Image (cartoon, rainbow, N blue to C red; front, side, top):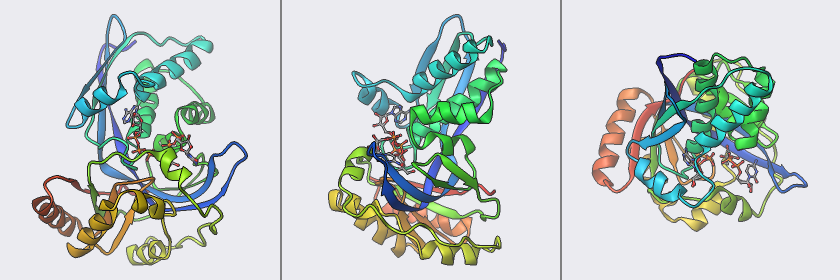
Length: 296
Ligand SMILES: C[C@](O)(CO)[C@H](O)COP(=O)(O)OP(=O)(O)OC[C@H]1O[C@@H](n2ccc(N)nc2=O)[C@H](O)[C@@H]1O
Ligand SMILES: Nc1ncnc2c1ncn2[C@@H]1O[C@H](COP(=O)(O)OP(=O)(O)OP(=O)(O)O)[C@@H](O)[C@H]1O
């Protein structure tokens, strides 16, 4: 075990497009999604300790600890236990660790907060413990924690198919300056999937060949998030957020994941930052964050 402290970023996951293309016999939906990761997210810290511990801080930490009580517990703890099991099964050491989560992302908001944290736990603890696990085993372990965890393990531009676990990297995707906005009302992912009426949309077509932002923006503009109609029916604020993002100059506005976070893509980081400032002034009751997606 290392004596040092290690930090692992858990970037917000953004579904730039999400098509629902079918449903498996077990009820899980088949997706075709273009995904990028923001420069902004949660932050995990791992330190050597005499016994395991888990602490929460950050803007949304108190909300999460209150919510998690009496429920299934935090995904970080589950990820730690699953990884330890996998390493110890192969004769590798996985000693006690103190984990701290700085919870900066709103909870149940469609930007993969819990999945990003679970993935960062797997990545970070593997480094902290100095363990070795094949990328297939890591991805399978991640999938046990949630459909979004394998893509969050990558945390780089990708196309996800299957239920989210079949991943192709999109190395030519440019960085997109954007603003994330959320009404601070939690949305339940299973609830949104349950409300879907159309489950057989066509898959995403041919991807751009170049890395030109204009080509990518035109491509993304032709796509959709099929979870947006049921989410809008549940939460009228999504329409309001989308209108506001357009009003402050976004080129493309869409909801991420099962909502309610929407993103607006801007021409440059200065425009995104100014728009976020204006939006936060207009709606201090919303979560508003300027960021930029990470490149391939
Ligand atoms: C909407 C997305 O965020 C898009 O990236 C993901 O598909 C959701 O991923 P997640 O939050 O990690 O989802 P999980 O925790 O695995 O599943 C929560 C619930 O969502 C539904 N679910 C999830 C993923 C999927 N491909 N089909 C589904 O129908 C299932 O009812 C499942 O019980
Ligand atoms: N570390 C965590 N961060 C956030 N939520 C967690 C965490 N651990 C457990 N949860 C539980 O997971 C639920 C879903 O939260 P999460 O923020 O991952 O949703 P989401 O942003 O909609 O994710 P996705 O985009 O993957 O659907 C929460 O309501 C909470 O009870």
